[in-house]
Length: 202
Ligand code: GRF
Image (cartoon, rainbow, N blue to C red):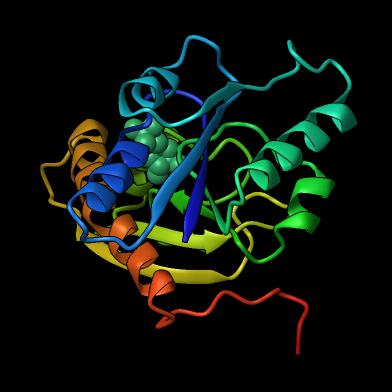
C-alpha cells in the first residue's frame, strides 16, 4: 500500500506512519510527501527519510485548477493507493478528490461529528472540547469529501478529558494517541480488515 501524505506544518503523524512502516508494524510504503508550505518541518522530515517531497501551493500554481491537477498528478506519479491528510490546512480540489475518491483520509483531533467544520482545527478544537465540559475526546480518521470534516468515519479512538486539563494538555494527549492510532488504522486498511469504498458506490 503506497501512502501519499499531504501536510502543512510539523508532520509528526507522517513521521509516526513512516516509523511504523520502518518497524514493519505497517505494511505500507511512504511514497510521497506534498506540502503547501515550502519551509515546513514535514518536508524536512521527508528529505531526512529519503521520501520524495514536493512543495505545491498557490505560490507554485497560482491557478487553483492547475494546483489541483498538479497534486493529483504527483500522487498518481508515485502510484499512491491511499492519501493521508496529516495536518493539511488547505481544501482539496475536485480533481484530486475524484481521482482518489474514497481513498483520501483525514485525521481530526476530536470525536466527529462534534467539534467539526470551518475554523475547527488546531487548538480551537481542544478549546471547544474543554469549554463543552465533555469528559471524552479522541481521534477520528475519516474519508475526505468536498466539505470540511464531513466524510464517512473510518475509525475513532477515545481519549479521556481530565477535569484539570488545559486545552494544551488535552492536545498533547490526543496527538500522542494519533501517533499510535493512525498507523494501526492504516494497517487495518492494508490487511483488508477495513475496506475503503467510494462513498457513492452501492
Ligand atoms: C493533528 O493534530 C491532526 O489531528 C490535525 O493536524 C495535526 C497535525 O499534526 N489534522 P502533525 O503535523 O502531524 O504534527
